[in-house]
Image (tube, rainbow, N blue to C red; front, side):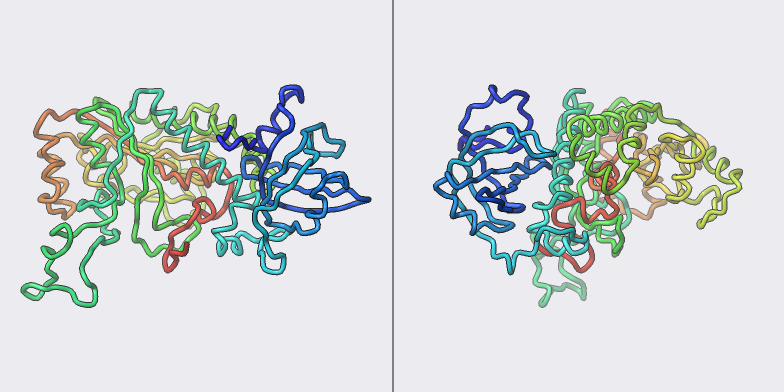
Length: 467
């Protein structure tokens, strides 16, 4: 319980017996609705701890009864009273108020969140108020539970939580879609020999917001064995879709003395564990999403939590797709990356459960993935789940110095900024592997929400950095 002595609404609604409650109680919240009938008023309040509201009964014997006339949707107040069983339908308990104190008013002519269904598009323009709605309160609680479950999963297995840099000079993905971090005056750039003088910048070199903590996590994996990162990452891709954000959070475990098979098992255990955790800890919120956003949501997550994942190589996946007789929008051919429609066919129609696809062509994967003996494929994996396709991407890392250097040349990378990464292969190199999971995309999948901008509190997208 908070040190203020306030009781959370969730704690009151979850009590099993009234004699376990120390009456009177003090509870705070924001007003959802007010209705009066026959000298008795009923005020619904919520403090964000629960999807359910708490009903406050205020009758004429309450010395603050006149205050009820000033209460409108959005007001904040403190209530002192007695918790008792409710005679109303759909609620177990209510509080009979002995006193009220309004803390903050909300002009009903101006307050935008009135008692009606608002569109998600409208609410995106009100990111400072939308957490007060049922949908976004539920998203926040599920997101919180999933974040806790992720830390719990790795901590219980002896992994160390590593905080990798947000500002970096390395492009882990080799894609170049990075935000520049600079202190240079863009209206008066210093130049030398006709080029921008990077030596005049804060770090004396070009620096960027990170797209991944993987490379730095490998440093600690090569000393601490089992580590993970969980932090913000950034992509400067001009993708204005329901699946893309410019700022998002990534979970990236890195494991020394581990091959691709071990990594695949870790990924399977991880997904099964976090989905089971959310179903167990957020039953009310998950029932809400199942009712209003995706009627198959809970069944889908339960299936994943209880399934053994299928494993197949990329070559086998391409063969199954070619033999399917399906007319895909994107043609299937060996050497092309699998599209969402291909991944969903494999998981939903061919196999009927999650699939781990391994050994992709080297030409479509990153330079740090371990080259197979065939010289054409790498020890990469994607974990595919029904309804969205890829949810995890990972690989066994290339631990052989000469092969890694050759791959970097093929990728057109200057190895100078990666001198420390190459040192890891010079001094006590080991087989190691890791994967990345986009946190927002996973929460989106777990809630059935259709737009990833509704999964993060303050979405950053092209031409949008409000709040």
